[in-house]
Image 1 (cartoon, rainbow, N blue to C red):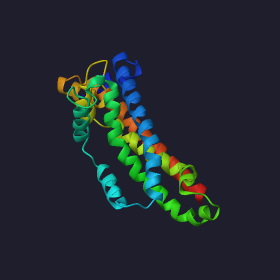
Image 2 (cartoon, helix red, strand yellow; image 1 turned 90 degrees about the horizontal axis):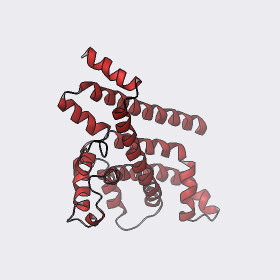
Image 3 (cartoon, helix red, strand yellow; image 1 turned 120 degrees about the vertical axis):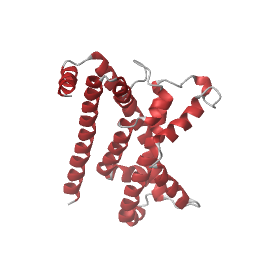
Image 4 (tube, one colour; image 1 turned 60 degrees about the horizontal axis):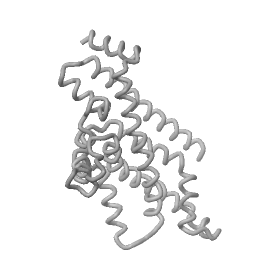
Amino acid sequence: MDNAFQAAFQLIVAMDPVLIGIVTLSLQVSLTAVAIASVIALPLGAAIALWQFPGRGLVVVVLNALMGLPPVVAGLMVYLMLSRAGPLGQFGLLFTPTAMVIAQIVLILPIVAALSRQVIEELWGEYREQLQSLGVSRLRAIPTLLWDARFSLITVVLAGFGRASAEVGAVLIVGGNISGVTRVMTTAIALETSKGNLPLALGLGIILLLLVASVNAVAYIIGEAAKRRLG
């Protein structure tokens, strides 16, 4: 085991091409998914927070429930959409990085939307009378509230990135774990461990742990900065 850890660190220090390729693809897929999901989910969460409409309670319940959506279920849903018999089968996206991005978006979007709704709803309760007295409509209030809550929302986005980077089930189903094409850190760790290639699996595991720890550290620092800013 000591030899495996030593070999894993050597792979990291030597910037092993296989390891770096897997890590790079993982970051590309997760960052793309988080960016697209955030662009959709942040204003969606704000809109749900500001407007009252029939069925709003049901929408909130569904969003909260989808935060715990099992990755394999999300992967299966995307697989059915992208398969040849599915509505998007003609685009040939299955077993590509694009399919993995779509699967991660399905997982991340409810998390970002639900958490941003809670943040904006609290902020709207605080600033509602002031904004309405200035003649600011709910639609115009959305960018204002999103900007004012930016520190809290950054931590929300980071939570989505943490979920995406550590996910294995959905991307395995729609990506196929193809070497050099759709193999990311989580799927590679599972495969290399089953093959007995512990150095590469441990190397990827160490990088993944460092990545998750860094995301949590950044979220903590931003949260503390926001507390100091708000007094």
